[in-house]
Image 1 (tube, rainbow, N blue to C red):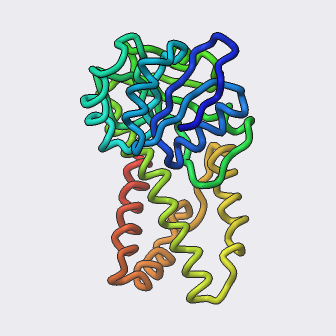
Image 2 (cartoon, rainbow, N blue to C red):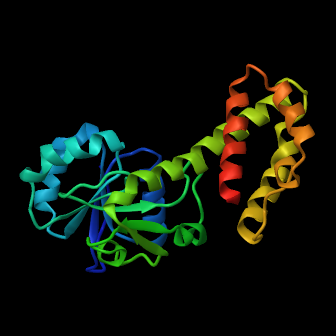
Length: 244
């Protein structure tokens, strides 16, 4: 159970969880001097006791797995003060008993600096409490979407973030294991792609962009019977659809 004293009179957060996202939130709050109490799932008796005793706590921030959030709320919400605002950070769930604010960023074991944390956009639900009502001390960019849009929105987040990470990890391994090249050889390639995506209105390069069908055929011949063969063909279809 970790605790930062509340001297400002501003909202204080009861943070449940100790995974990657929790560690980033704790670090961000520490950098800003935002008050919080942290509780891990192994200490839930303490959670109930402290959340009822700590009058300065008025927000419960659930930073646990998506598939645990609803059961956690169902089990504990009736046992603590009804005045507390419950917040989860799932991008896919819409729960009547809790507000949501999804941080649009990828969180590994590497912590960021304050400038980066302040730049992370949050996505909340239209018709519910807005971002500044949930986090008055934070000035992050924020946007709202309808609850009916959340599942597809989160699917896109997973595809754009997780799936590209899998591709890059496998590319690094291919360089290292098959070509005996250091994976660092591709780091600048990755940086240039990111820079193009952020800064250019026309970032795509390569054979798809050029309409180089002979090169594409050579690629597919080399990828025959590999899981990447279907991936390549799927992206060709996605590219063709995006041109219409």
